[in-house]
Length: 414
Image 1 (spheres, one colour):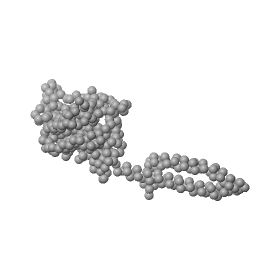
Image 2 (cartoon, rainbow, N blue to C red):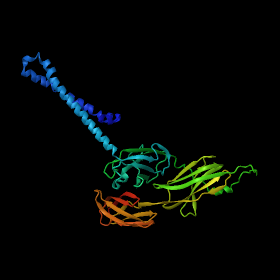
Image 3 (spheres, rainbow, N blue to C red):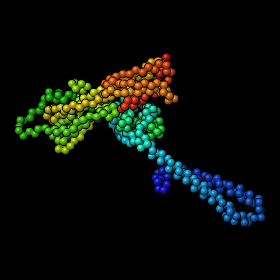
Image 4 (spheres, rainbow, N blue to C red):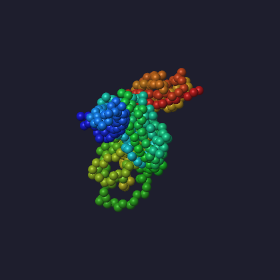
């Protein structure tokens, strides 16, 4: 049953190193045979003619039986180690999928990475204390020593981690995101290894935001003969919505019928009064079937974001959709370096009133500061005194019912 359980690649990777070990033991044991023969000659010098017969019937039989036991014990030990390691590997959490996917190209320089986690039945989430910037390493493929500073955000409800670089990535450059063994689950097991490779595009040459659509009406329109047979544009929109994905907003819409449409413009506002143009998406063309569109706002505003679509036909006539609203929440430490006996400032942007817990740990993992409170909706700020703490590096943990933030801070010497 054990051999049926083993896969071929497991046998190659785990059993193969054990075979040379068995061969080494066999060689060492056979090296003792000349000494055994010498002892036999000293005891019975007259029995030299019968010595080969004794060797075949006696000594060799003994040695063969001994070596047979050594080889079988070595193989069974290897099977046991392989079975134990395979069963342990199946119990570890792992990255099920990622955005962007592996080997993605032409990404924006302000891109972010989202990894979706899969947990076994015995585990529920990652250990928040290990959710530090060292859990994921981001670096250029050709300069692995040049680490890019990142910020992690963990969503325990949907089990994903968003990694956001703290600086713009270089354009047209390949990067590697690597999961380290410092990230463990709530049982203390490290996650399975994971590596993602992606490449940025020409960020400086990205498409500029489209000019206001209303300005098209001021352009000189071509002369079109007034004829009752001129076709009229048709747009039947069936769906328009926006949703938060990490720190970004996913805007989607669907149409059931399009005829003589030109493009869709995505507009955003903080107060539902003054809108700014974010981008423009071209129409897929005339269609009598369902068409789905998607656009991601990688830098939404903190607080309320109102989105609408402005669609234009090939004649330059425009119309607008209803607005959809999304609230972007945020919990962050404004400064990671604090003077001795100073205070740590924490910014909260929450849609609803929420409870909060703050924990500060020293390098040995001991809790040296703890605080809890009630956070007001919308924008709020909390200041935590660090009076009496020694200079050095500490781990700050912020937890609400929907957010977990881990950040390393440093208390400087006076």
